[in-house]
Image (cartoon, rainbow, N blue to C red):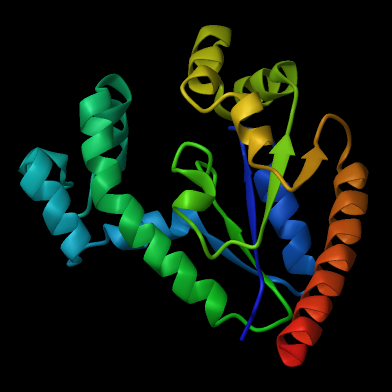
Length: 211
C-alpha cells in the first residue's frame, strides 16, 4: 500500500493528463477525480439518487444514467445549482480517491484533481502530502481549447475564467511543471519529480521507524 500521496492539478488544457500519463509510465498508480466523479453518480448509486432529488428526473437519460451534457449546461449557467451539485459529488469523490491511493501499490500514488484549488486545497484533502501544479500560459490554454474542442476564442476564455486563477493554483503548489513547450520537457520534469518523491518516501519511512 502507498504511504505518500501526490496531487496533480492545473487549469483547463494545461496538460494535466500528459503529466499523469508519464507518472503511470514510471509505474506510479494514478487515481483520477474525473473518473471518481462519474462513479459517484453512476446508475443505482446513492449519489445519483441525491442528484435526482435535487434537480428532478429531467437530468436523466432514457436509460436512467445522468445526462452529463444537460447537467453541465445547467450548473455552468447557475452558480447555486453548481454548488448544490458539488455538495453532492465532492465528498464522494474525496472518499473514493482516498481509498484508491491508500490501496495502490508502489512507493507513492498520484491523485489527479483538476479543481483542487476551487475545492478547498489541502483543507479539503488533508491526506495529500504534496501538490504539483501544471501551469500553462493563458495563450497556450486558449489555443489548446480551440484546437481540442473547436471552441471559439470567447468560449475558451470563458472556460478559463470560470476556474481558479493561476495565482490561486500556484499558491497551493509545492512543485510546478510549466507546460509551455514540447512534451519532452514534461518527460524531464516528471522524471525529476519521481526521483524526488521516492526520496521523500524513503526519508518518511526512516523517520516513522525512528519515532
